[in-house]
Each structure stands twice: as C-alpha cells, then as structure tokens.
Length: 316
Image (cartoon, rainbow, N blue to C red; front, side, top):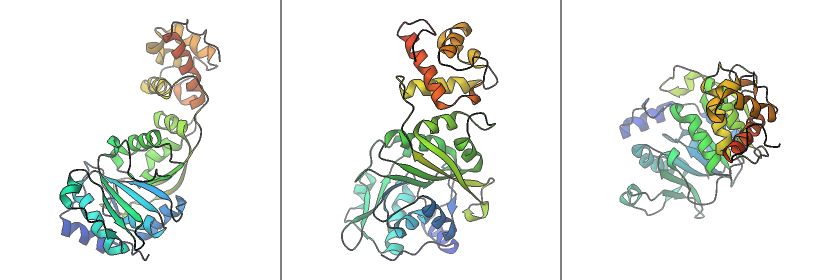
C-alpha cells in the first residue's frame, strides 16, 4: 500500500475546502511537517499489523503516517466535520476503500471503516469525545499514538491507560511543560499529580522537543514527545481510586507538609502523622518528595481507618 503524507499546502487546502478553522476550544494544532510525523511513528515503535488508537486525528497527518508504517488505526475524533473528512482524505492518499456505510448511519454513531485491497480494516473512525470512550471497535489497541489536544492531554492520556489495559505503550505529543510534568521524578520541581498518576501505569520519559513551526496554527509554546511503557502498578491492598485520592489531596496545597495536607482525609494532623509514620513516609515532607509506591502505602492506611482501624495501626 502506497501512502502519501500531507504537506503544508495540502493541509491548508483540505481545511479550506472543508471550511475548517483550528479552534482553541478543542485544542487543535495540526502538524504540517511529514518529517515530524515519521519521527513520532518511529519513536512509537509502530510495526506492521499493530493495532493503534489515535486521539484527535484532525486532518489526518499522523493517521497517514501510522498507515504508512503498516498500523491498523482506530481514530477517535470529537469534531464531526473532521470525522467526516478523514475517510475521504485517507482514501485519496492511502488508496483505502470505504465500507458502504451511509453518512446518516455514521452520524448516528456507526464508525466509518476503510479497508485495503485484501479487505482488511485499516482505519476505523469513531466520532466521540475521547473522555467518554469506554470501548473501541475491533481488536484491542496495543499502542496509543497521538498529537493530543493541548487542553485535555493529561485527562485523555490517563483515561486511556485506565480503560484500555491492552495498551502496552504510548507515544504522545503534548505541551513541553506538560511533558516535563508527566516525566518528572519525585523530588523535582515539576513533580506533581500528573507525574504520580502516570507512574501508576507506566515508566515515563520525555524523548524529544518539537518546535512550534511544524504546527498550524503556530502555538505559543513548544511541544514535546513523551513515551510511556506500561508497567504493573504498585503492589498494594488499596484501590487505584484510593491511591489517586491521596495523591490529589497531597498536592491540593503543595506548600503544606503532608501531615497537614492529608489531615482532611484522616481527620486530624495527629492521625495523618500516625498514618504516614506507619507507611514509612516522613510526615514533615511535602508531596513532591513521595513516589507512587509511597502514596500507595499511605492509601492502605487510609483504607484501614475507613474500615475502623485507628490511624497508624494498619500493617504493611
């Protein structure tokens, strides 16, 4: 299958013909540069036959790059105009054939499917808000590869890692500042809620900076690529929701010591301090010094107090 990637003139022509103007509301910044597309696909480790989910395909630049690498793509798009445009763009530039599904049926929720000459489904377009997606058509995806909308990048990433345990890795483009937060280790200035929650699911690292000039419209900030490789969550008797509740509370007032920050959960500073001591966490430390395993141990103490055990009496 021969795939032709989009260039700046083609992207602007597509947008003009469709009456599309990128909107800040949806966090849309379209990638103009084919070299950047191939860099994303390469760093994502996309292999022929790999099932990949893409969030926010926009005008199709990255979609075509994934298809060029041999992936089978399920693309989740919230914008109905872009969702209707994508199949025709891919049919023209990748030689795929749309199923005989009417636009009215697709408007009612039926995905658009494009197939290769052998009849294999290579692209499935789902018109839906990514934060509301609970299931995807076809085989479960192995990878998430996306230029994530700036305004919802962290919620989308964490939601997909939670809901689709078939994802063994992700490669996403986000604002450089967000990339730093996702990949930050405990003790660093940028470590916070996104860092700790992402670490629950995966090993995270920032792989490259992406300049502003490869986007249309040109954003006011630099972007970066972040690679996440799935790992087992910390071994703990606490639930993920309990651990995340502790993380959220610990960072709600970053300047407070943990015994004060977590007092609302445990009922008092004294009870929080006893629970932290039992969890092996310094009560006078702040949240940015605690790794996800430490938060999990604190969450076990919280779960114990909610079952009626006195703070600090729950065993490891």
